[in-house]
Length: 278
Image (cartoon, rainbow, N blue to C red; front, side, top):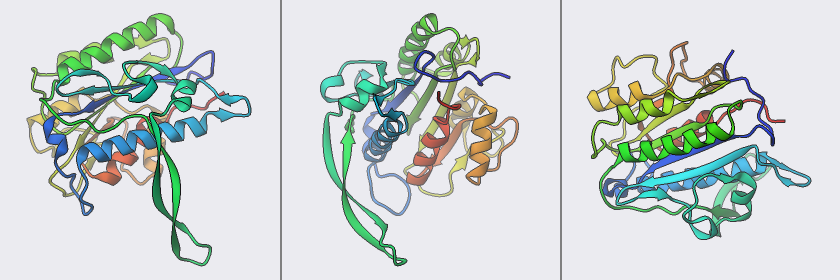
């Protein structure tokens, strides 16, 4: 079965996050909490990087099970890392963990032990900040990712294949992106084809369409294009998605349309769910 390669320091995999930074990402995300889409996405990526760092931390430090790229696309296309990692593409996780641009203080509600909640201040590392401006050069961003994927596979031909996650709120402004997407998913390691997942961030509210089995019921050709670009979820991701309450079938794809804040967080959790680490 594909997508079963053990992930270890000698057999790492990589995550490539493509972040829409177009002008419309300054609009508020759908749902009850008034937040800009760009802020929600940046917070979700920063939270995920923190959780990956904790997950891979051992006594001797953070192990490099993963290499991470965060690529922004809007007025420009390139690394979205801030601080010491600015301008870099695929970075070993230990270097990511050691080099947040800064550490903010955030408040969060936690159980008080008596059935209620209390607020406390927690450290929140920040690796990327929201950037807003320009169009949506999705095709160019996908081609950028394709170059990273091709180079990675050349150096790591036997590992769990790379995972590319595209977070966007609008249609591509530099041509139909399906060809660039196919250039990514047609590549493979010995363990399977490269995975490409797509998340459409909503400004309208309403119920998200999560992990569909077909494009039936999708509202327009744009949603159908993103669906067609998205890879079928591997078995272990389908099992995890089902355990989170999603209706899953054999042809379920890594795609969410009309996503709200909760959907963004869940999508990143499921989409980065890899096999067991060693």
